[in-house]
Image (cartoon, rainbow, N blue to C red):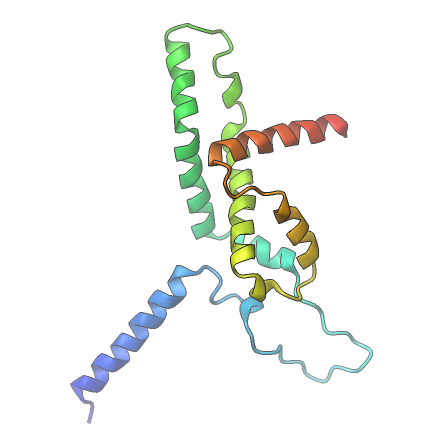
Length: 168
């Protein structure tokens, strides 16, 4: 005999687990599993592969939720600059009115991707602890200024890429 009260509890449990797992893009990804990996018949000579931070980062930044967030933030960040460009061109004020917008949207997506990942990395440091590449990511994130606006981050990222391309 199935009671309505039990059905409601079961339905609530299922719904809350769906809601909980949907807010964080990595709940179902294996590198956040706190349980030790199951290893079958591993000899002492075979080292257990250490979790790679680069794999965790790739999984996050390529997730649909993360991509949508960076695109949304970049549209807002670059909207005013693009509007000024269109306005200046429309009024024929400057011949090179849009020079500052070249590559700005792509630079914004790259810069915000790194900025958002570093925010997640700092906020959830315990989940990345012990992963291969942790120290390198800490050093990389040390250069990210969380107080910098998204537009400033995009412009700085673009100029750093130009400097890097010029040096190499």
